[in-house]
Image (cartoon, rainbow, N blue to C red; front, side):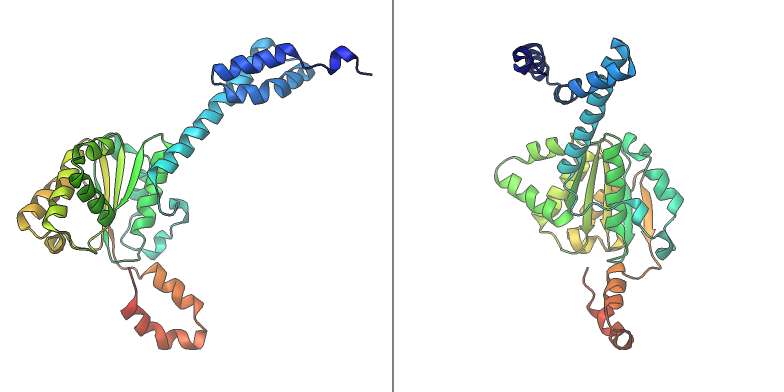
Length: 275
């Protein structure tokens, strides 16, 4: 039977919770009671009890940091390399991609250029490499190329381009997705060049594009600027070619059609496939 004294709050426990909160040890606050009960049952030493608490705090903090890195990266849709069908892209070397996923290119600030038609998995692989980088405690930022250029133009209007680029330089990996669908104005093209030049040999860049390098002038509008940008991006770059594959999105759309209509609509769908 509980006594009146036992019904009162444990003053020592309350004080301990307050001090742990001041020390910013929230996992200690949640776990010190249950862990103490378990340590008593298992006859653990004080050192073992403290070690278990500290280990849980470290694990939780790393989970929190990983969640923060994932949120800050702004991936449109998280996609894992483990879910990518490498057999569907004959030109893409799976072993090379998995080696890149180990992160050596990030430490060396080397670019990765992914070239191929729309819908063949470039964004999936780029995102998968980005997720792997987050797990390795790297700071990652994902941009759609056209959106990035618009943000750079807005930053220029506010005289904040240097601040924008300085924020990008805080990352270890920047992903620029879908370069090649929308031509840039001369201002936008120059700002993109300035952005990439600032990151050159300082931050790893993953670039996905549907265009051959010889066609980049269509987007940038200047042969000189195109040559200068490619000179930086291709220096020490890993080039991944996504050729010999059909659009994954097209295949998914065809699968949703009734069997008797799929062949009849195949040609029309291919002609109208969006990026």
